[in-house]
Length: 259
Image 1: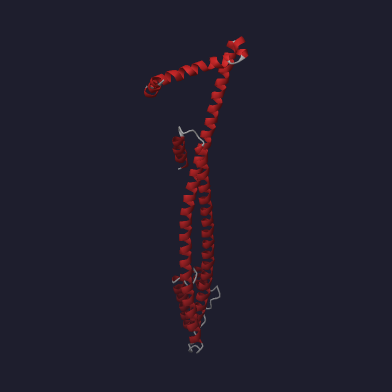
Image 2: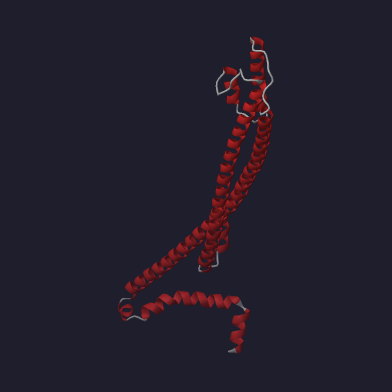
């Protein structure tokens, strides 16, 4: 007995021969184990072979379904992970947009405060009254040129919109070219302060909207990260129930499709 055991353990060929003989003898054993098989062995053998084939086919179908489930789970996990990565990159972009909007708010506030300070100085100067000037066409033409130059210069500095220049040149927009230059300077300073106040309020609204977008992007990123973790866990569970052979190949192919 020890000699037979040593031979079977040391030589793989006898083991293979015995395994083949057992497989070949299995249908006969099944047929002989049934009374119907003894009476009609040919019919019983056909039914046994059919049953073996069906059983093998069902097992193959189950393996194929498990392999498909593994591939789907791995592919989905890879797609969600890629989406989470892209969502993280989107958060960085929205963060940059918000930072730029916040910088514009600071710049708009500083410009508005400077314009408001200039308007205050102009009002204080105008409180002393305006010097007398002759009332003639030359004086009116000079005042008109002063207004045009002052409005154009303020627009070039970004303190007035381009529409203000058009209004000053065409006599619209509330500009009065016949005012004294000191009064026109007050009017330009007042208009500049009002325009920059509107720019500041628009910048604040844009900054708040950008911050809201950042929060939405962060929530989307966090949600996708949680979903990616769950998908990874589901893929691991499904893969553990799959046949060992081909599992690595399924995982690599699924992740390659997701990428």
